[in-house]
View 1 (cartoon, rainbow, N blue to C red):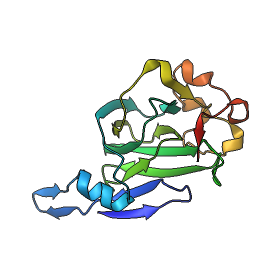
View 2 (view 1 turned 60 degrees about the vertical axis):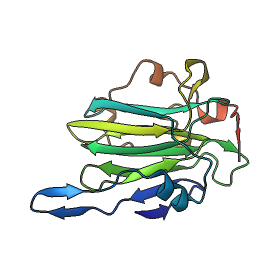
View 3 (view 1 turned 180 degrees about the horizontal axis):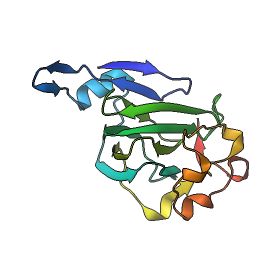
Length: 186
């Protein structure tokens, strides 16, 4: 597995070594030992796996869990293609309010690691997509938080025409970053 640093400290793209032949392919999608060595931390232990299925045009995000239920995530798209987005919402971070976008797909097998203090979202670029994420803390409804996906100060190109975006009612009403008091510090 290879690791690619992004412009946001602690956010990494992971590329597995894929072994293919005429039968198909094989790769190790996760090893706690190798993951810890790659990111240089041993305090991230995943306790919950989630999966969603969405169709073209769906935009989910920008979500996070507030402390004490904050979550680091390792995300991937084993079927289809998504644009995955992480926004730094850690007070005092040199990259506060900046985002990283990466295409995750069944072709490139890439994964994205997001430490606690990131708002997260994705848009579905293929007809259909399965999206999976490992979390290092359990979901708690009372700790849900979000930033408006279309906040112009974030400058995110979701690669979906506005008239084709499919959003939950909840995601249309999230606050702008400037109106949000972040519970995270760098």
